[in-house]
Picture 1 (cartoon, rainbow, N blue to C red):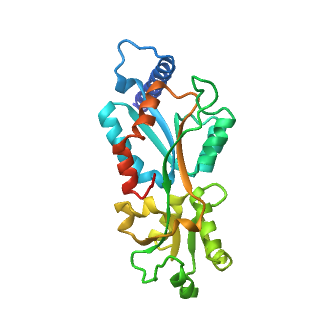
Picture 2: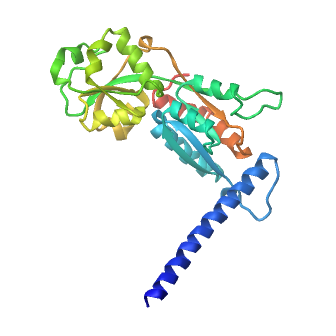
Picture 3: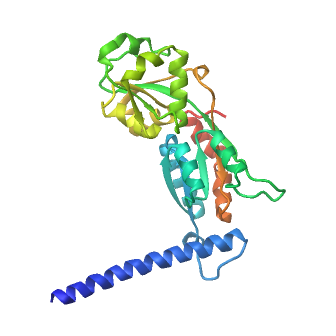
Length: 284
């Protein structure tokens, strides 16, 4: 009996493995054919294409909404991963299999284009992407906090020792972390805040530190603060854009992107998509 169960488990495992192999082969065939403008008889469009997107974590909620609508309209499946733009740029150089990259800092996109990682343009050269919006930062405290929020962070500074932890994203690879550092330096609070700093791997993690109360205050992306899922857990105030360099965010097709990836790229530029970006605090 034990032997029978072992055989059944092996057969089940083998079936799952074969299914994964067939799915991978189907996607590979579709991506190759689509890149060359060919059709695959017997394959539905929805089954053929799986677009893979690497997106800055400030897009966690806005992009989820846009991708849901895109998939409904086109039948094209999209898988999105969220993280820091700098880390994604490094992983793309190491062969990360994604078709579109939405960066919170356009500089990462331009570097990838110079290095040949983005798609080749018909007229020659490499695609340097398209700006989909300019992001903003916001000061945040937990929903239960009575900390005074103001554009110059006077309330945070005055709170003194009661602000034991202050959260930002890591400035070394997260654009929103760099903007937070610039803002704190402009307000002459960087030295004061450094002993209190807790750094998230990306802006979504830094935001979680605040909403869970692990940090008494922090600087987040306005797009995250405006999301209902986050707004219920925190209080926030948008900070002046003059405190930091503009967070111009750019989307680009990578060099192995299949033809349907262009549809998603174009969809993100439509008036309907831009309206959604605007609701989450992005400006043109």
